[in-house]
Length: 323
Ligand code: ADP
Ligand code: F6P
Image 1 (cartoon, helix red, strand yellow):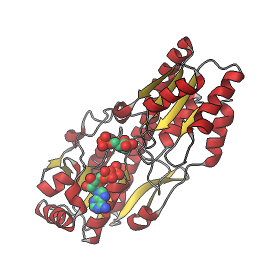
Image 2: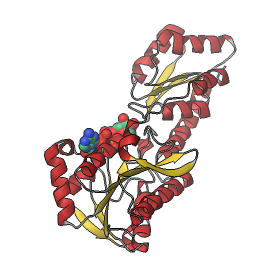
Image 3: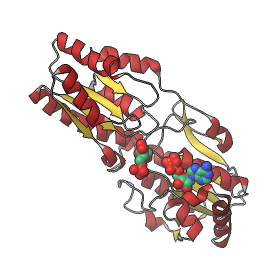
């Protein structure tokens, strides 16, 4: 039996498709197990400011298919201070919140870890399009973002083919290249430039284009992760150094929105349910993760120390596949 009677739920950091499915799962499984569930709006800002209301079964109707987050999200700088955390703790007391479910990225987890240190039980659910949480093979929103970027790149390829051009596409990922790498493979990019790996324009972009041309290629795709940036400048340099016309597209926030894929809805639902099940068993200060394709839970402090690496074999494979 759990000592926890009331659960708070919030979304924090960058939004991600599938966050709504996670909120819905927390609310519905929570109520099913006899918890009262409180929705906190705009991330940790809502916790600090008391922007909190009770959720019912009907508060989460018609949201499973919607992108964004009905609770909205925010970046809350004051939560990085001791004063902010203590205010969060006292607001949780005012609203009778015994445990908090945080849906977000590793920054949001760090906020949750601070709350746990001050005695508020927490649970983390991985939600970010970047798939960059060290402890989890998967983060909710990643599959939808990949599909959005793939759809855009397939369209860009059509026009690159018609005009025999080089298209340079910048995709999201300030610190992580998972979107860039996997969309690059799925869409047959000649060069994929990631924030995790240093690169030289001549060796990693110009040379593959010239070699491709010598093998008979007529159009080319270069993918650059946002963390590396400079798509417009790279396109200009390609034109100057190869004589091939080049165009740059910065895909931006289109990758953060849209109706979540089946995979994101199912993952979010399973992860939300798992978080509530653990709270029901009085287990907390954990984060939900995907490991060996199973939904598991890990200690939040240990989880935040874990790192995951981009797989070099996949990078090498992408080069062979684009020969
Ligand atoms: P994400 O959760 O997607 O990684 P951010 O890194 O922007 O996004 O973090 C989201 C929010 O989490 C921040 O705006 C802040 O409120 C909170 N946060 C991040 N790092 C910390 C920290 N070290 N201590 C307390 N709160 C933090
Ligand atoms: O959610 C992750 C992410 O999309 C990063 O890839 C990107 O750098 C960042 O969020 C941009 O966030 P915003 O424009 O909301 O500050």
